Length: 157
Image (cartoon, rainbow, N blue to C red; front, side, top):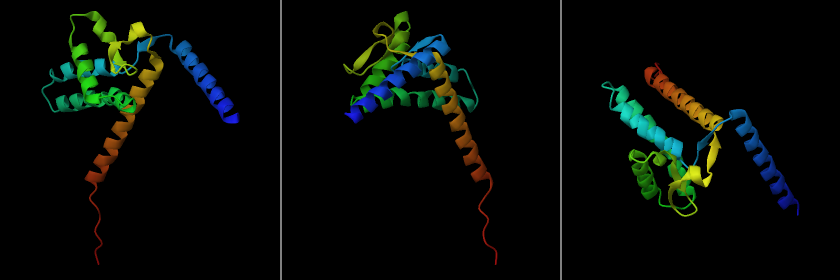
């Protein structure tokens, strides 16, 4: 039927767009929340080296990155808290270098080496997503600061 044909066309278009991104990017990163968790762990360590209030901002930014694997878990109807704990524990264990590839396996509801499983994303997509999300957050914070700086004008009669 027409609906099925439209869905097939959209799926094919999406697949071609992914292929185009891979060719433009020329590199891949591991998916399934692996990059976000690795960045979180790195920023958590980096925040401890700071002695100013920047430490809190860096730590909060790192924690905000965990929204991605948490949302993936929730959307797959899995226990997000348990999976995030396992994911962070795996990334914290630096004895096994393969742990850096650990991400979510939402089919089986566990964590797994997503590099071996072939769960990969174009690097360009990941970098652009992180960049745009950061810029959006900064813009919102600036607007919030402007609202706080300019107190409301009261009507003087």
